[in-house]
Image 1 (tube, each protein chain N blue to C red):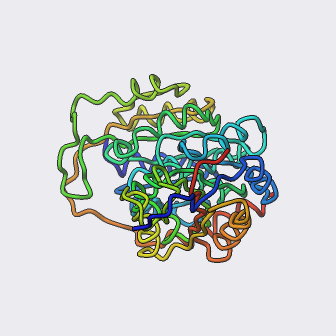
Image 2 (cartoon, each protein chain N blue to C red):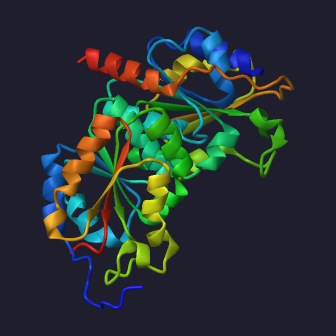
Length: 174
Length: 188
């Protein structure tokens, strides 16, 4: 266990995140609200493009993402770690088996930012990356402002691989 | 009404409508010659058919989209009724094959079998309209009016129990995704 009380992860400004989303030409953000990303969600809500769709579950989000992609839009998902754990079967069927680019930004809800994810007590935090590893889903950590390039990397990976790729937001955005 | 009767009636009136079909309607839809063009089988993701259809409908408001759902499937992602109602796609037509059973796994009863009212749930969630159809001749008569309506619209199709073995079309969804995306893009 880490004894270092200094933050491992540092907050990223929501304005910088939204700028990345705009650079990627995202048309729709399909969102199951996440505490860690509430400032991002608030900023996105002020925009006409991308359109933010608040949905009920991550299962729905993956289906809608697929339909939007099929129809020629450029969607992404914004969810939290518990949502990945909740929607594995749909991710398997749609993002992996049906080969749908699925760019997902995931908040590490309940993460203690003074510790690495693998040292956190919360299972949802500790087991997120191992779960993604089991399913062969690439992920990129956003641990501070210097990691902002994670958005482009995950987006490109999702479209190159035609499958899921994840940005993990390690601490609440500001 | 038998499932195959309803499928055949819907197939005859389809006329270029994009289709998303799930569970035990998949194989009959293919049998009716509807699985080749502008179509997705929503397989291995029970409950997701209407969400996939919603995405297509939002991306392509110029095209009508029909989803052939099951009552057991819709129960698995019941919140999708609210999501669809909130997004309010005028071009989405949601057909629910209602037999009160999980047919694919051996006809086990659904929760609240005989109590569920799909039309009430859809309109309570915010669908523009919902209709319940029990007889094939009524489906034939009402379909032209249904296609003329603005969505989101839910049609509950009351279908009979079948005790045959479940069937699957066995067509990979990945290929259908590529084909439908290309077909829709080619129109632009």
